[in-house]
Length: 193
Image: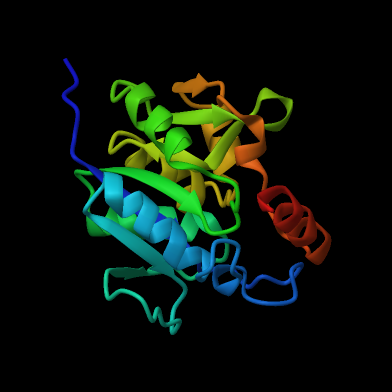
């Protein structure tokens, strides 16, 4: 029987924001930097919420940071670094480029959690798992490390596609919208109002 491990939160802000042309974590959709906004929302559910940063990156709104521990790029570094720091915890992971995510959607994900699976993830585009708005269970740690370090694969979505996960439908698909370019930023600003 699998017992449910404590759940921690992780906001991923370590990307280079190349397509956006400026730091996505610093963009303000809700009258404060997006990373800080998501951190505060997630922390209202999960007091042990951390910010994932790349090596040498700083965070000015909390000292609860986990620096990338691997010499690789991409969100898999942040996820694996958090799991390395606290391997016995589940991780609710949110990317900083999700401007429309709401408390309702975070609550839905937490309530849908299945600790017997490798992860619980929303079904995104083409009904594929959204790895950057998902709960990663401790059981996935060893396999994710193998996927990345031994097999040289960097895509957390491909890992989830090939793993035993719980896939759930979002109440509002718009909340999975990623703003990665200036055009997508403008769309998000219009939708938020």
